[in-house]
Image 1 (cartoon, rainbow, N blue to C red):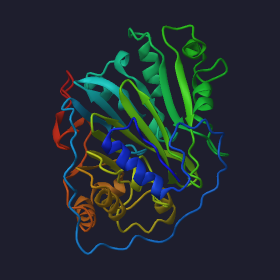
Image 2: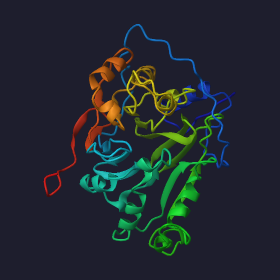
Image 3: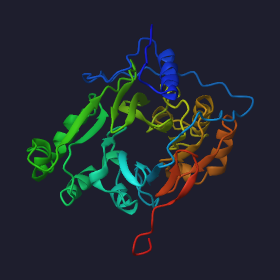
Amino acid sequence: MSLSLPSLPLPAARWLCALALALPGAVLAPQAAAAPDATIHADDDAPPPLAQAATPAAPEGCRNTGLDVVVLGSGGPELGDRRASSSYLLRENGQARFLIDLGPGAALNFERAQGRIEDVQALLFTHLHVDHVGDLPALIKAAFFSRRNQDLPLYGPTGSELFPTTPLFVQRQFGPQGVYPYLADYLSGDESFTLKPVAVAADRAQPVPFRTELAGFALTAMPVEHGLVPALAWRIEKDGCALVVSGDTSNRGRTLDALAQGADVFIAHNAIPEDSEDRIARLLHMPPSEIGRIAAQAGSRSLVLSHFMRRTEGVQQATAQAIARHYGGPLAFAQDCDIYALHSGARIGQCPARADGR
């Protein structure tokens, strides 16, 4: 298979070549795919343990010191954890650019991060579980009170027997026969902007990377396995800098490995502990040792854990030890509103506190 990447910067070309080698026959272009069959082919072979933790190689140059990522939500679907559900905001020079997932509570933290709806270039959904998309109606309603006047793309997975495609999901939210028909003008073109949902192929049995460019950023999605749920991991690049968000996945089939190559900040979801014996949970999520293996082979500059649940909240030391057997780079356990700079991979602060001090 020949691969021509004349327009890509070197880091992007390198990881795309790695992805092509990992996925023979992959088409490195946006795909307008029909909804895939809900068929899961699991690879039950556990990764072999590494004898020594791998320290990430020196990055080849994230040149944009203005790029950072704000963790708007570091929790999962449970109540009582004092965390918003899954959401991340990529900013450039303090301005909102991309929202990856928008779980309950994320809209409030978007405000705390001083985000403006007018500045968001696109919404990127990993999958359509409530804890990843629950605040979408809140954001769209809030947009009425903004000055946004350009269409808003929303990229998300294709569907299955259990889940609608992303365009159908949006239609069921805001269409004339949807849950919020009074917001239907945001789909019909009769408002100041139109919400433009796009279905991204999420067939893990035949994984095909999706790539597009928007506002000077390269966006790539890769199908990942999350049980029977159509799911994607996302990569955002600009100026040699790369953010990768795993979303929820067990990484069976290891489709996340190539996508994570050279990530400056790799956000991985830590929803199960290393010693979990819950068979269903392990079909849905990856244990810390798998997260560490991915970060090590990818040469990630930094690793940020997120999407915590009660079963992972109290075992951070054991989690860190499981990861350290594979990955020797910087490791952080995210809190809501933590900010990480892409050029250094380091935590550089938090969102300003609310007026009431919370």
